[in-house]
Length: 514
Image 1 (cartoon, rainbow, N blue to C red):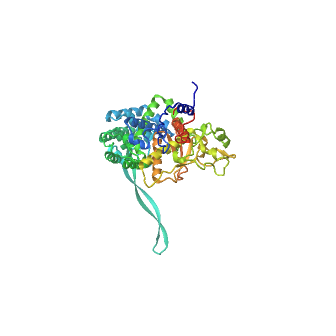
Image 2 (image 1 turned 135 degrees about the horizontal axis):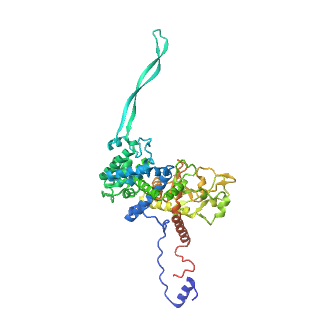
């Protein structure tokens, strides 16, 4: 039977006296964009963490530490030192005597010193295991000084018996200390002592993860966090893990714990130390079993601008020279509607706005600057969604959500033959990064946005920096591994745009369903 439009079918039913089926009730219009594709346990979703989601987030957090470790020029040389036969014997001996795993000991040594026996921190810790002097003495390590004296001479102006000004040499004895012995600088002593110390921390705190955290920030620091956790619903079990405590809070939920973690992160990043040690353990295992794969990772995270220094941020490692493809405005024009897509213009619904983009003095094609890769536009939309969702849960009655202001999407490397100025502006020629301004956001919304960005970063999805520093402008891009996901979010955006273009109660032409 030939197909008929809905209008034709309806007319036939009316002519024949056939009752029309009841039209389904229209659901209330969606207040704001909610993507079909979602990440579990992010932002306000942390409050519904299942054990399965917690395990997924824990693994993602470990993997996200790869950049922190592998961006350092010492990553390869450190792996070579740590896995040499002499040190391996020391780690295994320490495990036999203490019960603390050799693999974890070597991961800590790798992160603390890259296996350098006489490593010294400006903050004071020394040696391969980076032990402070006070902790070293508690471990039973010998750190001995000797007081010595040296004579210094100074000329002092005095008057003789005739009142004439003369200069005389005065000798002074000045005491100084000399380090005679420091067991922290002896790997065989330091590794064994650190192993016993860590084993004791594990017994005290009831978990190896807590022992590792305490090794980094101190026993008092961890005791304070455990006290807060014991007063926190869902985390009051003595066996609550570091991972469960870290992900068990937000600006809305368990706020005291969230603030404590936030403060400690600003101080020394110690709440993420256990995740980093676990990833270092995996990487050293990779080096021992698949050295070529390890070297590929080193190359992937190498800072191409200056290989002797660490990559300053994730974007500098993720964006490769071959990604910087839009040299001129003509290059951008040729990609419009292909790899480059337009951002939706509906701030109230999507939670972000992209007005007035472009370059100073260039008014030739403002509309071309409101584009980027689909995954980039999807990233913007997802950040706005999670931020608004968390802000709504926070319910700050004195503040209203303000659409996030996108200040840059795709940009060419050159305009009229001259290079575009800006330390990170060239990144925009990839179509894979964007800038947002937080200057006009309410304080609570800014807090929610920062939490969401951090959370997506812990999941390995985002890299972001304030650029230039102090500008209140964030330079953001998604990771290569998450581009497919954010591309799917963009498809959700497009479906929402199409749905919103259909008048309320209307049925698209050609629909066969009454």
